[in-house]
Amino acid sequence: MESNQTPKKRVFSAIQPSGMLTLGNYLGALKNWVSLQESYDCIYSVADLHAITARQEPALLRKQVTETFALLLAVGINPEKAAVFVQSHVPAHAELAWVLSCFTQFGELGRMTQFKDKSIRHADNINAGLFSYPCLMAADILLYRADYVPVGEDQRQHLELSRDIAVRVNGLYNDAFTVPDALIPKIGARVMSLQDPQKKMSKSDPNAGAWVALLDKPDDIRRKFRRAVTDSGSEVHVAQGKDGVNNLIGIYAALTGKSVPEIEREFDGRGYGDFKAAVGEAVVEALTPVQERFARLIADKAGLERLMAEGAEAAGKIAGRVLAKVYRKIGLR
Ligand code: TYM
Image (cartoon, rainbow, N blue to C red; front, side, top):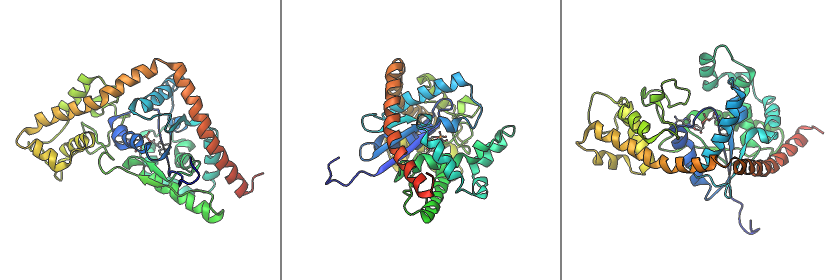
């Protein structure tokens, strides 16, 4: 970078490699990640350390990490513009997470709704990692002195806690961290289940009709939208209580860039059947090129390994410097 230019603001975000990425991940986060790389200094990570808070089958986890990495490139993250890496390849994440856990209160972690939800869903495995997960997430962000963190609505509370931790540590040790801001999209921040539109679309939903994977076959995508739950009405209008239709309008708006009034005009008098088919088609159109790029990328394992190593090296340099500075500030030799 030229010395007379102000440095670009830094963006950091990460995604778990558990299972297939969904349309919710894409509209809530990844689509934004892609556009941000044009004007910001972006660093994106496959959060494999976060994934082991749930039991994982080792061979499957390895495969999912590679596939998630390839999918990030397939949706349009360009490793020449952004650093893309696997979290466990940069040891500073686990190291800073320990430090931050010493500056985070038990009560704060206990209030996290994701922890409470997961403790109910996995009552047989409420491990310490699941509890201190937000400290690792804060470490991810603070290690890069990120200004902005693009995420979906469900990560807002974790982001708030990361900010609180950063402010607290800064209060004790002057300017240790940059306090990050969440970037949550206006449309697409909370894509809902196609079968129960009061629930978030999630890859852990056992009903496969409820969520769309980025690698779903076009005909499966079309079928999932044809069968999407709406209500007994027929007008394509955003309205209170019409969660299914509102969700589909949100998805269509996020993908086509059309405004809600434009969409309402487009489907005026045409009924839900036509509308659901159009949303399915818009999703197929957006995902087909992603799937084609994914097929090419995943066939070149050596190429992916090389990119992972380059990403980890670039990220590790920054993270190592910040970690060393924090160690120094808190008095570790
Ligand atoms: P994860 O892997 O669950 O989700 C990745 C991103 O996708 C967004 N998202 C959604 N957005 C809209 N609608 C949905 N239905 C939907 N489902 C998921 C999430 O908000 C997220 O932005 N802990 C994080 C990963 C992480 C992280 C970080 C994020 C680890 N370290 C540091 C930011 C900064 C997680 O489990 O996201």
